[in-house]
Length: 485
Ligand SMILES: [Zn+2]
Image 1 (cartoon, rainbow, N blue to C red):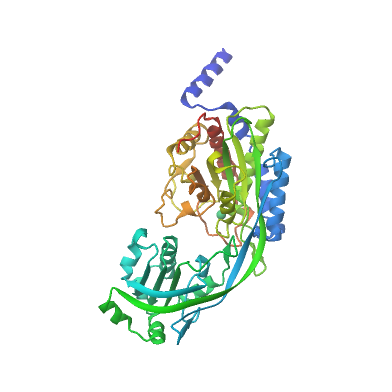
Image 2 (cartoon, protein in one colour; image 1 turned 45 degrees about the horizontal axis):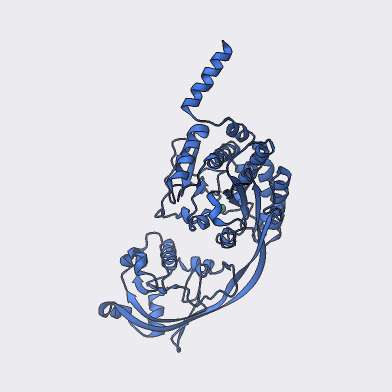
């Protein structure tokens, strides 16, 4: 009788949800204890904030590779756990704008955000004059290759320098030739720009031509008028475009750094060339003034998560479980330098990009934000339906069948002002038309501060989310056809 009842319950529950008992079994091998083990190591002071190209990052990459080996996660192409590359950090030593007679000097009467890119030399000529509101709303098609000038009052900025930063970013991303703003007063904003110019400019190549880069700068109206002897008001009244004929020049000092992505594979089906990528960036922002930024949530949480998922899948493989597809795990380096590790990987893939059916990227899932949520089991899903619907459906179904989380799509929009879709490593796969999901729990008060420490991690959530991502990956691996693009 008992047996019949159990069979009834089992078959009833299988009608309601199509849970795979193996998926559930191996998901349950993901335990807080192991997440703690890895994250305590990654976010320890010994690893000095894991800044790309520095000792702490190298120690972290060795730790991840050693763990992969102990789990039975294999080297890529049986040869290595690492993909090494170099990158460059440069600082502006001097920059100025001149008409041949008078000059405006960077951080004295001329301000910019150099780390968004800065040309070495640029001739500034004809600019289209537009008012600030039009400037903010111009479509990308009218920005590419063009030069614009606008004069604004500080009172027009509702978010101060943040409005300028966003505007510059929009114009640089859209491929403008130059964008020059004059403002009635730079008061209270100058410090921000000076601070920004102290950041290094990071690039993958040293000989990258920067001549064509967008020139995005702001200066006080009076300084511009005085140095170059013209009236902006006069220009605004008379013209829709005007001639500036100025020369911009900058000099930089550069340093080379070496770093590496960490990779491992779990191959269930040798006759299949299809892989599912599970990724997280293991680097963080290092030390500042001797203070270590441990980066427990960003992105120690995602790194620990892919490690426990890798371990669970390697266990399933060892036990002889069959799945149709294979797994590639990547711990990306230099994400904090501008997604460099994932850009290098997708430029030099060790498994062809055509064979990647989906990319699941995890960045900051160990904490909570302060926004309103239906339950505290929320998880932001970004990008899942941008390339195709299949991945979105599998993730949703895995949630119904196994996890019952509150999947939250509020940031799943390329127009969202936070631009999260572009802000972690999945984007470098998405831009190659590979379906991706970015798993994320939002920013919090300790984001990019030295207080992002391991004692604040919500372990039960991290375990729950890791299990969910495991089940989603498992279900993708079971699906017979490559996700249609
Ligand atoms: Zn991150």
